[in-house]
Image 1: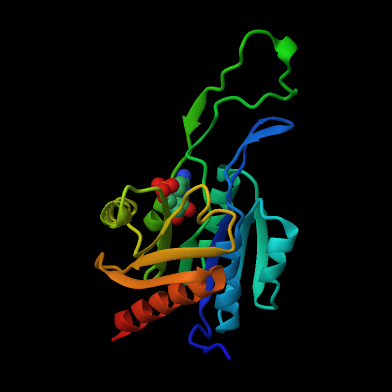
Image 2: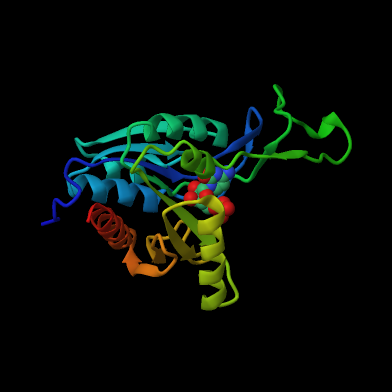
Length: 232
Ligand code: C5P
């Protein structure tokens, strides 16, 4: 039986991967399935939290794992929609987890009509940078609110992985950072995951590998530990 250590906690979790429209039928996207974020939402609910899950482009069978009376699901498509939905969800959350894979760039112009070969020439897509959602959540942070970021990295080795993660944690101003190594066969789209969790001091506060639910459980353990050490 899951512990009820998150009883009374209100949490907001983003999951999935954004899609940046190019024209009515095409988008720039990524391979995030949303499984890790869905597992985080399900685990939080099982441990007593009330959860808003902001789902971006998650397949129905994956999203079904988040079905629980204490999970409210909101959907968002692009990074801009996700930013709005997370700002709303975070406004009354005690813990915010940004597990979604957000596109760094979006097309400058979205065509109202499908681009075709007849449009002429070899097409190029001009891009503009998306705002960093988690950075704005940190800027708007409520007193006592804990914010958790994710980092998906393809490092040369373990030392580089942790060093990059620490820099990201500081740059974004998040309290905890969950870092996972991804590759063609690892992390995205797969059922299993392996992560390190950096605590508020940058030290490794947790490690887990296995199913995404097992990883979710370790992330919530680290959150729970951080909340109880803040209170003492
Ligand atoms: O910089 P990078 O994309 O690796 O950072 C990953 C973390 O930042 C994740 O928590 C992701 O959800 C978040 N992010 C964001 N807004 C962006 C890009 C990433 O909130 N535009």
